[in-house]
Length: 303
Image (cartoon, rainbow, N blue to C red; front, side, top):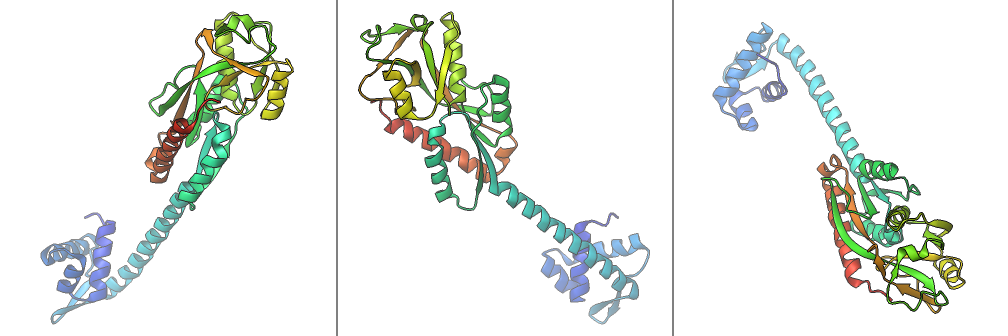
């Protein structure tokens, strides 16, 4: 017979209690099944392990030696099991989230996660990459990632959270500032401003500008909303701005104009690593992020 982990456990318990009936009861197995297993073990080893003494059984010298080996094996298995549990716990407690979009929401989002799941250690990545392949690689290798694009993120392990319109923020003194709508091609010779913390937004901007027949000339990149607003008011550049998630661009002297063609919008998607989804804590974080973003969109208004 094969000497399995179960056989070793049965032998250890029988040796400890020195009574077949008591051992069978402790192991929750039939006495006949336990007796058969112990007899098969002895036949497999070719030596007697037990000796009968009335109603009890005692270990032979062979049995005592086999018990020492059994204890070492079971102890090593338990030690290895504990190591694996520790590895699993460490893996669960360190979850990598990449923000390739909605970086401004990261502080409040992470704060909420910390409050709800204080035992989890988060590794946060704010990637400056604007290369399509780099964005996809980061998204695919992170446990969770928020990404943006002119189209939904195409993958089985992704979900589109929402779609938002992009508008042009121009100075009030701009010749087209009084128009109800504009064409993106009208701004082919303009300087563009880029939101630094939104690498995916530049890809979206370049996509729509190519559709309009030109490549945007980006002359400034910043996350400082006061600086961006002042540059727009001063006529130093225009900004393609999400009308929900970057509502900080506002104030006197700035006009927001809808774009008639091409119709400009972006999709915000949540992407996850399929292997990571086997970990319950990451499943919980995925659901939490979805709820958080949905609630944020509901509360947000364009000002």
